[in-house]
Image (cartoon, rainbow over all chains, first blue to last red; front, side, top):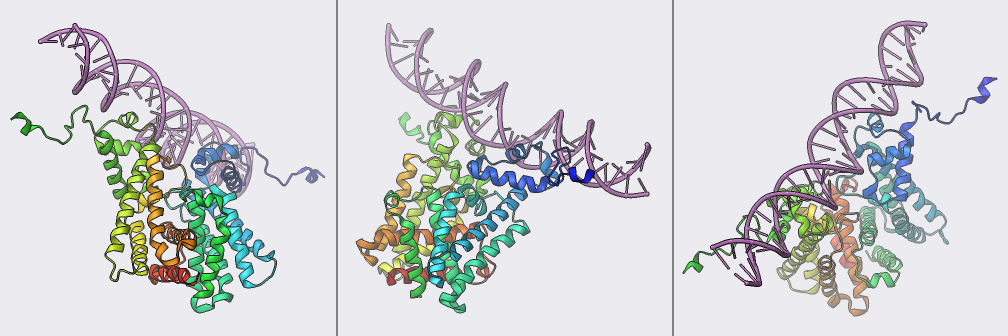
Length: 202
Length: 202
DNA sequence: GATATATTTTTACATTGTCAAGATAGTGGC
DNA sequence: GCCACTATCTTGACAATGTAAAAATATATC
Protein backbone atom coordinates (compact mmCIF):
# COMPACT_ATOMS: atom_id res chain seq x y z
CA UNK A 1 0.00 0.00 0.00
CA UNK A 2 2.90 2.32 0.61
CA UNK A 3 3.77 1.95 -3.03
CA UNK A 4 1.00 4.34 -3.95
CA UNK A 5 2.87 7.15 -2.27
CA UNK A 6 6.12 6.66 -4.17
CA UNK A 7 6.39 9.51 -6.60
CA UNK A 8 8.05 8.70 -9.90
CA UNK A 9 9.50 12.20 -10.18
CA UNK A 10 12.95 13.12 -8.94
CA UNK A 11 13.13 13.51 -5.19
CA UNK A 12 15.15 16.75 -5.19
CA UNK A 13 17.16 15.36 -2.32
CA UNK A 14 20.89 14.89 -2.42
CA UNK A 15 21.02 12.32 -5.15
CA UNK A 16 18.13 13.16 -7.34
CA UNK A 17 19.29 10.67 -9.86
CA UNK A 18 18.56 12.32 -13.16
CA UNK A 19 20.73 15.39 -12.76
CA UNK A 20 22.07 14.67 -16.21
CA UNK A 21 18.71 15.33 -17.80
CA UNK A 22 17.90 18.20 -15.50
CA UNK A 23 21.10 19.96 -16.45
CA UNK A 24 20.09 19.70 -20.07
CA UNK A 25 16.67 21.09 -19.20
CA UNK A 26 18.20 23.93 -17.25
CA UNK A 27 20.52 24.64 -20.14
CA UNK A 28 17.66 24.82 -22.62
CA UNK A 29 15.77 27.08 -20.28
CA UNK A 30 18.78 29.37 -19.88
CA UNK A 31 19.28 29.55 -23.65
CA UNK A 32 15.68 30.61 -24.01
CA UNK A 33 15.92 33.37 -21.42
CA UNK A 34 19.35 34.97 -21.83
CA UNK A 35 21.93 35.65 -24.51
CA UNK A 36 24.43 32.91 -25.24
CA UNK A 37 27.38 34.60 -23.56
CA UNK A 38 25.52 34.64 -20.25
CA UNK A 39 24.84 30.90 -20.30
CA UNK A 40 27.66 29.52 -18.18
CA UNK A 41 28.24 26.25 -16.41
CA UNK A 42 27.55 27.92 -13.09
CA UNK A 43 24.38 29.53 -14.39
CA UNK A 44 23.07 26.17 -15.55
CA UNK A 45 24.01 24.55 -12.24
CA UNK A 46 22.24 27.38 -10.40
CA UNK A 47 19.09 26.81 -12.41
CA UNK A 48 19.27 23.08 -11.72
CA UNK A 49 19.60 23.84 -8.01
CA UNK A 50 22.96 22.18 -7.54
CA UNK A 51 26.44 23.39 -6.81
CA UNK A 52 28.69 24.57 -9.59
CA UNK A 53 30.88 21.48 -9.37
CA UNK A 54 28.07 18.96 -9.60
CA UNK A 55 28.00 18.79 -13.42
CA UNK A 56 31.60 17.59 -13.45
CA UNK A 57 30.49 14.03 -12.63
CA UNK A 58 28.12 13.93 -15.60
CA UNK A 59 29.98 16.01 -18.17
CA UNK A 60 33.77 16.05 -18.27
CA UNK A 61 33.82 19.70 -19.29
CA UNK A 62 31.50 22.61 -19.96
CA UNK A 63 31.93 22.06 -23.68
CA UNK A 64 30.46 18.58 -23.37
CA UNK A 65 27.43 19.85 -21.46
CA UNK A 66 26.88 22.55 -24.06
CA UNK A 67 27.44 19.99 -26.78
CA UNK A 68 24.64 17.80 -25.49
CA UNK A 69 22.37 20.83 -25.17
CA UNK A 70 23.23 21.74 -28.75
CA UNK A 71 22.37 18.19 -29.81
CA UNK A 72 18.95 18.61 -28.24
CA UNK A 73 18.67 21.89 -30.07
CA UNK A 74 19.23 20.12 -33.38
CA UNK A 75 16.53 17.64 -32.50
CA UNK A 76 13.89 20.28 -31.86
CA UNK A 77 15.18 22.10 -34.94
CA UNK A 78 14.64 19.07 -37.14
CA UNK A 79 11.24 18.51 -35.61
CA UNK A 80 10.21 22.13 -36.24
CA UNK A 81 11.26 21.98 -39.87
CA UNK A 82 9.55 18.64 -40.38
CA UNK A 83 6.29 19.88 -38.93
CA UNK A 84 6.46 23.00 -41.05
CA UNK A 85 6.88 20.87 -44.16
CA UNK A 86 4.01 18.60 -43.18
CA UNK A 87 1.68 21.53 -42.67
CA UNK A 88 2.48 23.24 -45.95
CA UNK A 89 -0.51 24.24 -48.06
CA UNK A 90 0.18 22.07 -51.08
CA UNK A 91 2.29 19.02 -50.48
CA UNK A 92 4.65 19.37 -53.42
CA UNK A 93 8.38 19.03 -52.80
CA UNK A 94 8.85 22.71 -53.66
CA UNK A 95 6.15 23.87 -51.31
CA UNK A 96 7.45 21.68 -48.50
CA UNK A 97 10.96 23.04 -48.98
CA UNK A 98 9.61 26.56 -49.01
CA UNK A 99 7.86 25.98 -45.70
CA UNK A 100 11.05 24.54 -44.25
CA UNK A 101 12.97 27.61 -45.31
CA UNK A 102 10.52 29.85 -43.54
CA UNK A 103 10.63 27.67 -40.44
CA UNK A 104 14.42 27.80 -40.54
CA UNK A 105 14.53 31.57 -40.25
CA UNK A 106 11.78 31.53 -37.66
CA UNK A 107 13.70 29.06 -35.51
CA UNK A 108 16.93 31.02 -35.75
CA UNK A 109 15.16 34.17 -34.64
CA UNK A 110 13.03 32.70 -31.88
CA UNK A 111 15.77 30.43 -30.52
CA UNK A 112 18.63 32.85 -31.15
CA UNK A 113 20.91 31.73 -28.34
CA UNK A 114 20.31 28.04 -29.01
CA UNK A 115 20.89 28.53 -32.72
CA UNK A 116 24.15 30.34 -32.09
CA UNK A 117 25.27 27.58 -29.78
CA UNK A 118 24.33 24.88 -32.28
CA UNK A 119 26.32 26.54 -35.05
CA UNK A 120 28.80 28.38 -32.85
CA UNK A 121 32.16 28.25 -34.52
CA UNK A 122 34.48 29.12 -31.72
CA UNK A 123 35.12 27.31 -28.51
CA UNK A 124 31.60 26.81 -27.34
CA UNK A 125 30.47 23.22 -27.51
CA UNK A 126 32.45 20.04 -27.89
CA UNK A 127 31.75 17.76 -30.84
CA UNK A 128 30.10 15.09 -28.78
CA UNK A 129 28.87 11.98 -30.63
CA UNK A 130 25.28 13.00 -30.01
CA UNK A 131 25.96 16.43 -31.46
CA UNK A 132 27.57 14.98 -34.57
CA UNK A 133 24.66 12.61 -35.02
CA UNK A 134 22.02 15.28 -34.48
CA UNK A 135 23.74 17.69 -36.83
CA UNK A 136 24.00 14.95 -39.41
CA UNK A 137 20.29 14.18 -39.02
CA UNK A 138 19.53 17.81 -39.83
CA UNK A 139 21.63 17.54 -42.94
CA UNK A 140 19.88 14.37 -43.99
CA UNK A 141 16.51 16.00 -43.56
CA UNK A 142 17.52 18.77 -45.92
CA UNK A 143 19.05 16.29 -48.36
CA UNK A 144 15.87 14.25 -48.45
CA UNK A 145 13.88 17.41 -49.08
CA UNK A 146 15.84 18.55 -52.12
CA UNK A 147 16.27 15.05 -53.52
CA UNK A 148 12.86 14.86 -55.24
CA UNK A 149 13.47 18.29 -56.76
CA UNK A 150 16.96 18.06 -58.20
CA UNK A 151 17.63 14.31 -58.29
CA UNK A 152 20.39 12.28 -56.74
CA UNK A 153 23.10 13.68 -58.96
CA UNK A 154 22.77 17.21 -57.66
CA UNK A 155 21.22 16.66 -54.26
CA UNK A 156 24.41 17.14 -52.27
CA UNK A 157 25.31 20.38 -54.00
CA UNK A 158 21.76 21.68 -53.79
CA UNK A 159 21.44 20.83 -50.12
CA UNK A 160 24.75 22.50 -49.37
CA UNK A 161 23.67 25.58 -51.26
CA UNK A 162 20.37 25.94 -49.42
CA UNK A 163 22.04 25.15 -46.11
CA UNK A 164 24.70 27.79 -46.70
CA UNK A 165 22.32 30.49 -47.84
CA UNK A 166 19.87 29.86 -45.01
CA UNK A 167 22.55 29.71 -42.37
CA UNK A 168 24.32 32.76 -43.73
CA UNK A 169 21.17 34.84 -43.77
CA UNK A 170 20.25 33.77 -40.25
CA UNK A 171 23.70 34.54 -38.90
CA UNK A 172 23.95 37.89 -40.63
CA UNK A 173 20.62 38.89 -39.15
CA UNK A 174 21.54 37.73 -35.66
CA UNK A 175 24.87 39.54 -35.89
CA UNK A 176 23.30 42.73 -37.24
CA UNK A 177 25.65 42.77 -40.20
CA UNK A 178 23.06 43.56 -42.82
CA UNK A 179 22.68 47.01 -44.38
CA UNK A 180 19.70 49.08 -43.25
CA UNK A 181 17.46 48.34 -46.22
CA UNK A 182 16.87 44.76 -45.16
CA UNK A 183 15.06 45.87 -42.05
CA UNK A 184 12.34 47.43 -44.16
CA UNK A 185 11.67 44.75 -46.72
CA UNK A 186 10.93 41.28 -45.53
CA UNK A 187 14.00 39.81 -47.07
CA UNK A 188 13.51 36.20 -46.15
CA UNK A 189 10.74 35.53 -48.63
CA UNK A 190 12.79 37.15 -51.36
CA UNK A 191 15.80 35.05 -50.44
CA UNK A 192 13.75 31.87 -50.41
CA UNK A 193 12.48 32.50 -53.89
CA UNK A 194 15.98 33.14 -55.20
CA UNK A 195 17.18 29.96 -53.55
CA UNK A 196 14.38 27.86 -55.01
CA UNK A 197 14.74 29.49 -58.42
CA UNK A 198 18.44 28.66 -58.31
CA UNK A 199 17.57 25.02 -57.70
CA UNK A 200 15.24 24.93 -60.67
CA UNK A 201 17.79 26.61 -62.90
CA UNK A 202 20.67 24.36 -62.03
CA UNK B 1 70.84 69.50 -36.27
CA UNK B 2 69.40 67.69 -33.29
CA UNK B 3 66.25 67.19 -35.30
CA UNK B 4 67.93 64.47 -37.31
CA UNK B 5 68.10 62.31 -34.22
CA UNK B 6 64.43 62.57 -33.34
CA UNK B 7 62.89 59.24 -34.16
CA UNK B 8 59.33 59.33 -35.40
CA UNK B 9 58.56 55.93 -33.87
CA UNK B 10 57.09 55.47 -30.43
CA UNK B 11 59.56 55.76 -27.59
CA UNK B 12 58.35 52.73 -25.61
CA UNK B 13 58.72 54.72 -22.42
CA UNK B 14 55.91 55.39 -20.02
CA UNK B 15 53.76 57.43 -22.36
CA UNK B 16 54.51 55.98 -25.74
CA UNK B 17 51.78 58.01 -27.26
CA UNK B 18 50.28 55.72 -29.85
CA UNK B 19 49.17 52.93 -27.59
CA UNK B 20 45.80 53.11 -29.32
CA UNK B 21 47.28 51.94 -32.60
CA UNK B 22 49.63 49.46 -30.95
CA UNK B 23 46.73 47.79 -29.19
CA UNK B 24 45.03 47.35 -32.53
CA UNK B 25 48.25 45.88 -33.94
CA UNK B 26 48.60 43.54 -30.99
CA UNK B 27 44.99 42.50 -31.41
CA UNK B 28 45.46 41.69 -35.07
CA UNK B 29 48.57 39.73 -34.22
CA UNK B 30 46.75 37.77 -31.53
CA UNK B 31 43.89 36.96 -33.89
CA UNK B 32 46.41 35.61 -36.37
CA UNK B 33 48.12 33.37 -33.85
CA UNK B 34 45.42 31.98 -31.57
CA UNK B 35 41.75 31.01 -31.66
CA UNK B 36 39.24 33.75 -31.02
CA UNK B 37 38.27 32.61 -27.54
CA UNK B 38 41.87 33.01 -26.38
CA UNK B 39 42.08 36.62 -27.53
CA UNK B 40 41.32 38.57 -24.37
CA UNK B 41 41.87 42.12 -23.29
CA UNK B 42 44.68 41.04 -21.02
CA UNK B 43 46.29 39.00 -23.78
CA UNK B 44 46.27 41.99 -26.11
CA UNK B 45 47.66 44.24 -23.38
CA UNK B 46 50.37 41.66 -22.71
CA UNK B 47 51.36 41.64 -26.36
CA UNK B 48 51.45 45.43 -26.43
CA UNK B 49 53.72 45.37 -23.38
CA UNK B 50 51.43 47.34 -21.11
CA UNK B 51 49.44 46.54 -18.01
CA UNK B 52 45.99 45.05 -18.25
CA UNK B 53 44.30 48.30 -17.25
CA UNK B 54 46.08 50.51 -19.76
CA UNK B 55 43.58 49.97 -22.58
CA UNK B 56 40.82 51.42 -20.42
CA UNK B 57 42.02 54.96 -21.21
CA UNK B 58 41.70 54.37 -24.96
CA UNK B 59 38.75 52.00 -25.18
CA UNK B 60 35.87 52.20 -22.73
CA UNK B 61 35.37 48.45 -22.79
CA UNK B 62 36.83 45.31 -24.32
CA UNK B 63 34.01 45.22 -26.81
CA UNK B 64 35.06 48.59 -28.18
CA UNK B 65 38.66 47.47 -28.60
CA UNK B 66 37.53 44.33 -30.38
CA UNK B 67 35.12 46.39 -32.44
CA UNK B 68 37.93 48.57 -33.76
CA UNK B 69 40.00 45.50 -34.50
CA UNK B 70 37.04 44.02 -36.36
CA UNK B 71 36.74 47.25 -38.33
CA UNK B 72 40.36 46.87 -39.39
CA UNK B 73 39.56 43.31 -40.34
CA UNK B 74 36.81 44.49 -42.66
CA UNK B 75 39.24 46.90 -44.29
CA UNK B 76 41.81 44.23 -45.11
CA UNK B 77 38.91 41.98 -46.14
CA UNK B 78 37.65 44.54 -48.63
CA UNK B 79 41.15 45.12 -49.89
CA UNK B 80 41.75 41.38 -50.40
CA UNK B 81 38.53 40.96 -52.37
CA UNK B 82 39.25 44.03 -54.46
CA UNK B 83 42.72 42.84 -55.35
CA UNK B 84 41.38 39.40 -56.22
CA UNK B 85 38.86 40.98 -58.58
CA UNK B 86 41.50 43.17 -60.19
CA UNK B 87 43.76 40.23 -60.84
CA UNK B 88 41.09 38.02 -62.38
CA UNK B 89 41.98 36.47 -65.71
CA UNK B 90 39.33 38.07 -67.84
CA UNK B 91 37.93 41.34 -66.54
CA UNK B 92 34.26 40.64 -67.03
CA UNK B 93 31.86 41.35 -64.16
CA UNK B 94 31.19 37.64 -63.83
CA UNK B 95 34.84 36.72 -63.70
CA UNK B 96 35.61 39.45 -61.20
CA UNK B 97 32.77 38.27 -58.96
CA UNK B 98 33.99 34.71 -59.26
CA UNK B 99 37.45 35.76 -58.13
CA UNK B 100 35.96 37.65 -55.21
CA UNK B 101 34.03 34.58 -54.15
CA UNK B 102 37.17 32.51 -54.10
CA UNK B 103 39.00 35.22 -52.17
CA UNK B 104 36.13 35.35 -49.70
CA UNK B 105 36.49 31.70 -48.73
CA UNK B 106 40.27 32.00 -48.70
CA UNK B 107 40.10 34.95 -46.31
CA UNK B 108 37.67 33.21 -43.98
CA UNK B 109 39.93 30.20 -43.79
CA UNK B 110 43.28 31.97 -43.48
CA UNK B 111 41.99 34.63 -41.07
CA UNK B 112 39.61 32.37 -39.19
CA UNK B 113 39.69 34.11 -35.83
CA UNK B 114 39.45 37.58 -37.37
CA UNK B 115 36.59 36.47 -39.58
CA UNK B 116 34.71 35.04 -36.62
CA UNK B 117 35.23 38.24 -34.70
CA UNK B 118 34.07 40.37 -37.62
CA UNK B 119 30.87 38.38 -38.00
CA UNK B 120 30.62 37.16 -34.43
CA UNK B 121 27.02 37.19 -33.42
CA UNK B 122 27.18 37.06 -29.68
CA UNK B 123 28.72 39.45 -27.27
CA UNK B 124 32.11 39.90 -28.84
CA UNK B 125 32.61 43.30 -30.36
CA UNK B 126 30.67 46.50 -29.89
CA UNK B 127 29.05 48.15 -32.89
CA UNK B 128 31.50 51.02 -32.97
CA UNK B 129 30.96 53.66 -35.68
CA UNK B 130 34.10 52.52 -37.45
CA UNK B 131 32.86 48.95 -37.45
CA UNK B 132 29.50 49.93 -38.86
CA UNK B 133 31.19 51.97 -41.57
CA UNK B 134 33.70 49.25 -42.45
CA UNK B 135 31.00 46.59 -42.59
CA UNK B 136 28.91 48.85 -44.77
CA UNK B 137 31.86 49.40 -47.10
CA UNK B 138 32.14 45.65 -47.55
CA UNK B 139 28.48 45.50 -48.45
CA UNK B 140 28.87 48.30 -50.94
CA UNK B 141 31.78 46.54 -52.59
CA UNK B 142 29.63 43.49 -53.13
CA UNK B 143 26.71 45.59 -54.31
CA UNK B 144 28.89 47.35 -56.88
CA UNK B 145 30.15 43.99 -58.08
CA UNK B 146 26.75 42.48 -58.78
CA UNK B 147 25.26 45.69 -60.12
CA UNK B 148 26.64 45.33 -63.69
CA UNK B 149 25.41 41.74 -63.76
CA UNK B 150 21.85 41.94 -62.53
CA UNK B 151 21.03 45.65 -62.82
CA UNK B 152 19.88 48.11 -60.22
CA UNK B 153 16.46 46.52 -59.79
CA UNK B 154 17.82 43.26 -58.41
CA UNK B 155 21.19 44.32 -57.08
CA UNK B 156 20.17 44.42 -53.44
CA UNK B 157 18.57 41.00 -53.52
CA UNK B 158 21.45 39.52 -55.49
CA UNK B 159 24.06 40.98 -53.18
CA UNK B 160 22.21 39.71 -50.16
CA UNK B 161 21.97 36.27 -51.71
CA UNK B 162 25.67 36.03 -52.49
CA UNK B 163 26.59 37.49 -49.12
CA UNK B 164 24.39 34.98 -47.32
CA UNK B 165 25.59 31.96 -49.26
CA UNK B 166 29.25 32.93 -48.94
CA UNK B 167 29.00 33.71 -45.26
CA UNK B 168 26.99 30.60 -44.54
CA UNK B 169 29.43 28.33 -46.30
CA UNK B 170 32.40 29.94 -44.56
CA UNK B 171 30.79 29.66 -41.14
CA UNK B 172 29.68 26.08 -41.63
CA UNK B 173 33.19 25.14 -42.60
CA UNK B 174 34.75 26.96 -39.66
CA UNK B 175 32.26 25.37 -37.31
CA UNK B 176 32.75 21.89 -38.76
CA UNK B 177 29.05 21.49 -39.33
CA UNK B 178 29.26 20.05 -42.82
CA UNK B 179 28.76 16.36 -43.59
CA UNK B 180 31.85 14.33 -44.40
CA UNK B 181 31.51 14.36 -48.18
CA UNK B 182 32.39 18.03 -48.43
CA UNK B 183 35.89 17.37 -47.18
CA UNK B 184 36.58 15.26 -50.24
CA UNK B 185 35.19 17.38 -53.02
CA UNK B 186 36.30 20.96 -53.26
CA UNK B 187 32.89 22.35 -52.57
CA UNK B 188 33.64 26.03 -52.88
CA UNK B 189 34.01 26.05 -56.65
CA UNK B 190 30.76 24.13 -56.97
CA UNK B 191 29.01 26.56 -54.67
CA UNK B 192 30.34 29.55 -56.56
CA UNK B 193 29.01 28.21 -59.83
CA UNK B 194 25.58 27.60 -58.33
CA UNK B 195 25.57 31.11 -56.90
CA UNK B 196 26.53 32.71 -60.19
CA UNK B 197 24.10 30.53 -62.13
CA UNK B 198 21.38 31.62 -59.74
CA UNK B 199 22.18 35.24 -60.51
CA UNK B 200 21.94 34.65 -64.24
CA UNK B 201 18.67 32.78 -63.87
CA UNK B 202 16.95 35.35 -61.72
C1' DG C 1 23.82 -3.44 9.92
C1' DA C 2 28.77 -2.38 8.05
C1' DT C 3 31.37 -1.39 4.21
C1' DA C 4 32.02 0.37 -0.39
C1' DT C 5 30.67 3.17 -4.25
C1' DA C 6 28.50 7.01 -6.43
C1' DT C 7 27.06 11.63 -6.09
C1' DT C 8 27.20 16.18 -4.38
C1' DT C 9 29.28 20.03 -1.75
C1' DT C 10 32.89 22.78 -0.05
C1' DT C 11 37.10 24.91 -0.75
C1' DA C 12 40.70 26.50 -3.56
C1' DC C 13 43.14 28.32 -7.65
C1' DA C 14 44.08 30.58 -12.07
C1' DT C 15 41.96 33.43 -15.40
C1' DT C 16 39.00 37.12 -17.10
C1' DG C 17 36.83 42.21 -17.31
C1' DT C 18 36.18 46.28 -14.71
C1' DC C 19 37.05 49.72 -11.32
C1' DA C 20 39.55 52.86 -7.90
C1' DA C 21 43.65 54.64 -6.20
C1' DG C 22 48.44 55.68 -6.67
C1' DA C 23 52.63 56.65 -9.62
C1' DT C 24 54.87 58.78 -13.57
C1' DA C 25 55.51 61.60 -17.70
C1' DG C 26 54.53 65.59 -20.32
C1' DT C 27 52.44 70.58 -20.43
C1' DG C 28 51.57 75.16 -19.13
C1' DG C 29 52.35 79.32 -16.23
C1' DC C 30 55.35 82.25 -13.41
C1' DG D 1 64.22 76.96 -13.72
C1' DC D 2 60.46 75.56 -10.75
C1' DC D 3 55.61 74.27 -9.61
C1' DA D 4 50.98 72.98 -10.33
C1' DC D 5 48.06 70.34 -13.64
C1' DT D 6 46.53 66.93 -16.70
C1' DA D 7 46.97 62.76 -19.32
C1' DT D 8 48.62 58.28 -19.22
C1' DC D 9 50.00 54.03 -17.13
C1' DT D 10 50.51 50.77 -13.04
C1' DT D 11 49.10 48.55 -8.99
C1' DG D 12 45.74 46.39 -6.34
C1' DA D 13 41.21 44.93 -5.69
C1' DC D 14 36.67 42.78 -6.75
C1' DA D 15 33.22 39.64 -8.74
C1' DA D 16 32.57 35.99 -11.97
C1' DT D 17 34.10 32.01 -14.57
C1' DG D 18 35.97 26.89 -15.41
C1' DT D 19 38.48 23.31 -13.31
C1' DA D 20 40.37 20.40 -9.72
C1' DA D 21 40.97 18.16 -5.05
C1' DA D 22 39.19 17.11 -0.66
C1' DA D 23 35.34 16.50 2.43
C1' DA D 24 30.51 15.13 3.17
C1' DT D 25 26.47 12.52 2.18
C1' DA D 26 23.37 9.18 0.05
C1' DT D 27 22.77 4.76 -2.20
C1' DA D 28 24.10 0.02 -3.01
C1' DT D 29 26.21 -4.41 -1.79
C1' DC D 30 27.32 -7.95 1.12
